[in-house]
Amino acid sequence: MTTQIIKLSHSDVFKRYSSKYDIFRDLYEIDLIGLELKNCESMIAEQIKREILASKEICYSVASKKNGGTDILILGTISIFGELSRRIVASRNEDIGYKISQTISNYKNYDSGSFNIGDKSFSLKSAIVMGILNVTPDSFSDGGKYCERDLALKHSESLIEDGADIIDIGGESSRPGANSVETSEEIKRVLPIIKVLNKEFPNVILSIDTTKSEVAKAALDNGVTLVNDISGLINDPEMIKTVKACSAALVIMHMKGTPQSMQVDPQYDDLVGEVYEFLNNQCQLATYSGIKNIIVDPGIGFGKRVIDNYEILNRLQEFKGLGLPILVGLSRKSFIGKVFKNEINEREDLSLAAETFAMANGARIIRTHKVKNTVDASKLINFIENPGIITSV
Image (cartoon, rainbow, N blue to C red; front, side, top):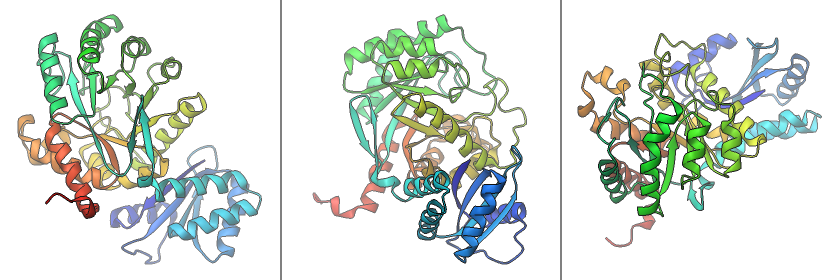
């Protein structure tokens, strides 16, 4: 069963859930929140519904599309959901009650948490920046620019000077339609630059952008402390063991299909719900396997239509319910270019606007090409939210 906080205050989202649950009354409010319990066992669902209705709260149910279970939607507030979780625990449905309680706590206390990568700890109160280093000939934005060792080193130095906390090194393009790369070739591309970066910038976090456990192992053995797996642990079943053995941090991203197929008419019945459930399931798998430091990425541009990318951004706060730091990569992507009809080199300002919106709504790692502007935007949001920290002006 998956539990998810839903921002029903978005009118189009409310209409969609109204259709799913046959809600015909006018219940829309500007601050309306829903709590959805997906795929409950039918008998337990009936018990939970009775408990909710006995509390005089509003709930609806519908047959789940999975395993013959039941989906339940509860309308209310965070405090109401908290009280309901306690009542559900008291009614001897401890597992579901605790799941609800954990989701509520994750969502409510998201900004007060922290996360670790290697020996560094970061607060969830503000965002950090991941600079992109593609050592590939065919990446969508900067393919071929940094394949040579000296050029890659110089670009990395520039990213670090601009304030990057992480350098994400990729040796295989993940642009739509990109061809896959042999493991040996990917290692050949990334390992020399990883070695030199680890030597020249020992205090900077290095990340490997790969879906292959052998590439990850080679990188982790040479100073990398974060694995960015865009397949969300789907491509290589050995990835979990590799990350666990090296005590590394892990990014789990959602992608529908593969880079070769992901943009061939992607369709969703419930976009955010499906992405959320995938991330929840894969994070549980990683956690049960012993991985302690996990980051989630909803996968903007990976197996999504243009409209889907904007909806994920609009509802990004819902992913706080997972209780894990949210990473997003928006920089120069085609969902911006297709709406504004501009080329890659004309998307910097719009990328920054999207990144700023994402940070204000829960993104805590921004993967970007233009590091300095994103670092400044993160600082600006921090000043706005905490004006008391401004002391030197």
